[in-house]
Length: 229
Image (cartoon, rainbow, N blue to C red; front, side):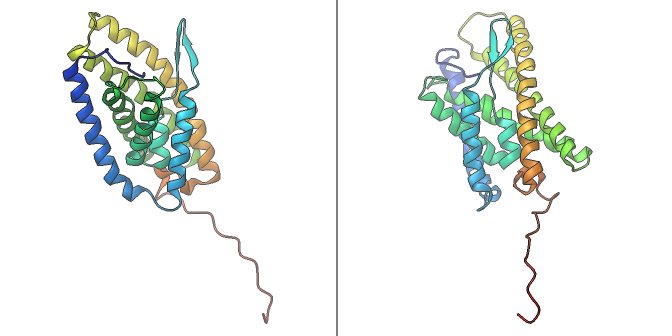
């Protein structure tokens, strides 16, 4: 969903830039409560994983392909604020590789970081409040959160294009094309996110931000001291 330069007019690009800047500003302050000595390294690993995964495209339909957006994965693993920052940094780096336009950076952050993270984490929290706090439930919630976040971002793209798109494309045609393809991409995103979150939760559930308050850190193994020592 990387938007290149020229897809949107200046007012929409500037407006999205303001939204992106506000989102990043709020995330910078909120991330202080999410990060600690244990989770800070995971945030770096998450950003690196999202960056690498976005470079891999998987076939979706005839002539189209998709890749991981990463908003859901980052939000569930390291928290919504930190997750938004991770995706924003990834998009910034990719911009220098011509994957997304310079003037469209605010739009890409609004679509994939702000919308993707907020929708995904909202769905994840809603589902985990209903289901029991166990690994299958978390895996399922991760899949659903990611699967919903992708077409939600596509829908925001359509709204922005209706306001300030530079090409004369019928809105109905654009909506059908964007949602049709991104629903399929969302299924791929959901699978990748569920497998990744489920794998981390199986080994170190205490590192999964979405599980905070529901699990304890693994007990330390202590060696018995000989009597009289």
